[in-house]
Image 1: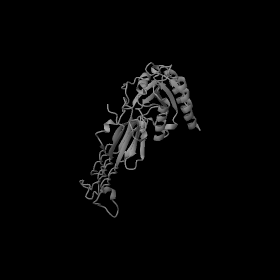
Image 2: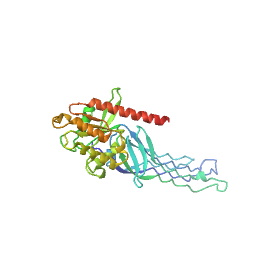
Image 3: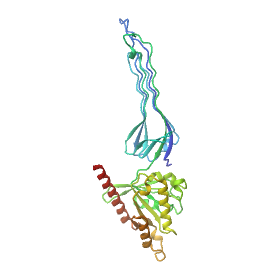
Length: 342
């Protein structure tokens, strides 16, 4: 399945039905008067978020969405049928922008959340509406109004509490496969992961937490280099960043700083997001040549964040790291609860 997370589309609500000119033609009613009904309202365009979609692929080849027009009014004061609303299903986490102004129209996060994007046009008035003492036989009606038309840009931002970040080949895909049932492509070369991967990791209480494996960032990602620029948006919603660093790298501190600089350059508060650091691939490190404890201490002083020594392949050190993830999330939940009460 292709992972599509940005699309441009056009939406058009239905036109209101025209009102009509009609007069009563009943036996024994010589002056029946006007009876032209109003036109029906045009259908609106409505977006709805659903859980079973993970990508915007459905919009790749279909860019125009139009709701049904309202029906024409009928004789005997009958109002035309209203046009059927067009409900467009999108994945949870879809942000809807006005393509012309770049303003956010809506952000659909919760399942079954709905948002009216384009209102249908009102139906035109039939001639019965214009009956008055001065005009007993109006011979005119109004046409229906056009529905709203909008150019939109849809952007999907994955909904995950924990974002796994790091340079290419740091072991992010291996980690998420070790922690969850996700089975991303894994190989010994950079940029194995070309799309974000989601995995549900179970807490000791049984609750599930969504982890997102974000494709490798490189230097200059915030300006468009590599794959990171396309996928940095997917960690905007995360509450905790799990920063994975390859312990076999020839310069661990440089690797850490590279990612921090890209988070800072991208903005949107990513650099201030709580982080947990993990030195991965410790099973491949010669302990006589590399002092991992000293590296962890150096990173801790640099990042002011907890540092764990792990191996995603052998699952060494994963439990203490996960416990810290749960602790940080619980602290965030407690702070948010206090803010709601205050």
